[in-house]
Image (cartoon, rainbow, N blue to C red; front, side, top):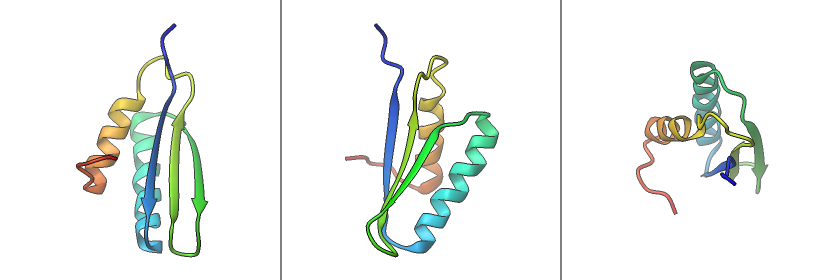
Length: 79
């Protein structure tokens, strides 16, 4: 059985980083015409995690979406 689940977690360390992630994600959702599940888990006012999940990604749209998101955010390495 083929796995069709994809998840990306991006930590943010300021309100500005959080807003930037949110704005880029919203733009890419419109561009790619997709609707991932999004969750924001704040640790405190300025720190937290932005989570993007694709369930049942039959058309494999998550990969290009994640690649463009990471490039737009200037992230070139993932842990």
